[in-house]
Length: 223
Length: 219
Image (tube, rainbow over all chains, first blue to last red; front, side):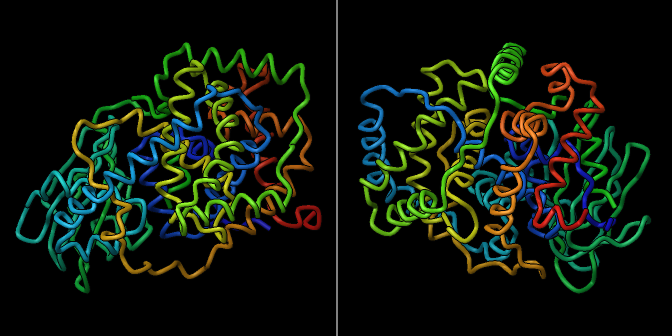
């Protein structure tokens, strides 16, 4: 029986499983999987395939001292770990709200917060530009209740995934797991819901040419 | 913009991949030789012992099972042997570091380690020159987040995939491997296997759909 909420198969799952998906879209799809079980199921199937093929893989001989090198690396790691914990403790203040974000977004955001601050767009809207090695721009928006993101447009497409809370714009209301896709012709001015803070993850491909897999991203993620 | 980002991913890598795909799969038949349930339980115990006791002999066991496979996998993707070995070392260190996060109810060790290898592959690609905060640090770990309404039984999904993969015709198996494990796009696969693009898409779709429980009973 066909269930129209079951995502159609596209290249995105195989690109994801193999680790070939652009990091910005990897973050986007993993975050969405954290919110939507049917996406999570498809990703889990892809992951399972890779595990079986790794077991089926040939053996390539390693250097004679490979294992002892690995054990040395572990010793070094154990030594420096206490230093890292101190750094984490310093950076880990006042982050309860961010700790509620789904993985893997949470890790990316925490990592970014350690060396960059939120940018204040208006009194109720903040933006954090995320450390993603991608030609696309990736930002997390924090929108307080009833606050409106300043009107903006962009040269390319903007994919906005609601991570927590919700917002409305002239095309309708978006809740957790919903993805809004806005093309260059759209001017876009979302307003956060009244009943809580909204977090939204935006990926923007300003003026960049996406082909192939991105079509699959749109078909699968778009509603 | 290139959406498929493969490390050092010049065309050279892809070419190596094509040659590999063609030379390997047209001559040798591909058969799933996955682990037994006992093997998997033993590997899972090793990771749990790394987490609970920092057990080095368990780590050595994991290393002996996975390191040669990972090296072979990385060379399959076009890495030079020395580079592959270096990446294997990084992956294995991450296995040690992340052992506490391994949940045997969520995934087999193979699936979990492949995911680390895949991420390592990406990290190498976006290495940053700043001191990194380790987001895995227990100080930063929150109370478990709310789960979606429908709980996924990942281990059950994995069991289904194992069972069904073993039954797939080779022509589908080879394409699944190329797409999901080697990371070729559909059009790259079409070229490597000399098949029409539509055939590649439909075979992969069919194969992926078959990887669910009781596939036969639905037909």
